[in-house]
Image (cartoon, rainbow, N blue to C red):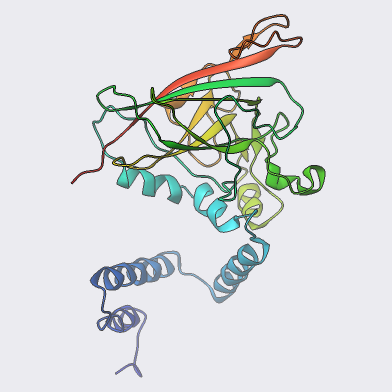
Length: 292
């Protein structure tokens, strides 16, 4: 019977409606979700106006979201939920590279590139030469690993944020494959720290809390290799001014690296004599094998 529900009995009444779920995990997730949502409303004594504001907020998050503007992902990020899920599911005590956030600017339709390619897409900026090596936990090279990489430009913008300037072309992102020694390398432009998008509902949260919207300078990577667990990770510039204030809590100390500055006239890793200053980054990634 539900005609005499009270502030406390409503929770169990809703939870019972999931008793017939075929999937036990689905039942568990929704039963616990209802419990915590109802407990939150009771704890803060949620008002009708506040509830309506929250519903409108979620609607606006959906309205502004597009394949290039993933506001729900950003909401999860700024509330720390994305990192929490990563921390819950991360294996502890291994010698493999730490994972971190995917971020809202990953795009599946990225171009495939050969090692050594310039993936900047013609975007101007300080030349960056990246060289990576992919190993297993025992230090053996992982050949044939697929490496998604993407990053911002020198002003902190991703390609999806400037479609008119780039005429819809992808830039500063590519899919590469490691060679028989586990190596991959490319040329691009150096990224920069940037604010997460603040012109939508998530920006309202940051302003209401007087929180910084800034993310430190970083490069994104997503690794897939047969027999290994996928790895989503980033590398952060060691001298970035926002290392201690990542708006989405994605920084990992083990992922802080040096972006080495070279003066004009130097020779780049690909043998090019550079007429302008450039930067180099080298890093070794370690993947965890899948359990049988």
